[in-house]
Image (cartoon, rainbow, N blue to C red; front, side, top):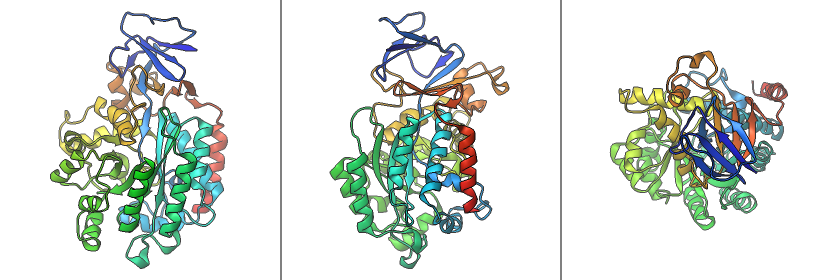
Length: 444
């Protein structure tokens, strides 16, 4: 079926002013201003009251953390004490609570206009060995694309790391499960709905050996690499004291300084380190809300982009954001960016939307999503401007960011509507809220 999404109020694409045609899950045609589709259409969607964006792409999250938002033991702390407060609580994760945490995080993202999400899951307490499989099942049920990163921690307090002994795993166990997940879920085809990446958690929770082995495994199976890096000054000091080098030097030493890699946060890099990362096309996920909540600092997005690094957007974990809303993250990126650069022109509304679409797609190594263009996957987010906050707005695209959009009216993934009239198709939102809230009580 050829669906004509016609006459949008505004569209984040050139040459599609009068809409787009979707066919077989792809964008088949762009319709310029004053024109009509070249071929026949089977159905039409009147988008005159909608701003049309490529589906937003989230490149860093921790789904399970929806169970511990605004936790009294962790609020008002910076990263290291925040983690030390929450690790023992997270160690109580069980499969049922975890499944609900994933379902809620994905649903919240979808309702915010997100069509593809990357999750970084690195906690595997007893009984939760199939956490990534659970995530794949939940994403399939919602019809969302995902890059699921098999996270890991094998450097505990007794080894000089940060995590408690109860939440780390043995290196051989980690690598064997990575192999299993790649074999079961990793799809490299165009339009893939699930891909696997390998994601040792951070310099203060994994060994150099695990980093090197993960890089070799990723090369062998053609998958991507992800980790936290450059998030805090504490991390820089840890790397210097334990490894005798700064985080970017550490990254190079373990074989991660390459195009397969994208990093979470990337705050405390020097200008020269930004140039090195850019020269190797290492991607960086900007997490503005988490960076602000934990007082971690400002990501040098402009220096990284100028150097050649893809820069995407992420909501980060819902215990440090404390939300899973990607259109809100775009607004946070604008505000934080202007504060950082002390310039109203340094970061624009269109800049942050492109971070959350094209930039994020590049971080995930995908060239089939992130843009509205012929041949791309039909992943779309449509927003209405009918709330009071938008009244009087003259630039509809800028208004989404500047006036604070929070919820998409329609969301399409692979040509299928997954959100209609602001609600996810096939999801009882009230029931989900009730069941998830009950599950969260065990983490009080």
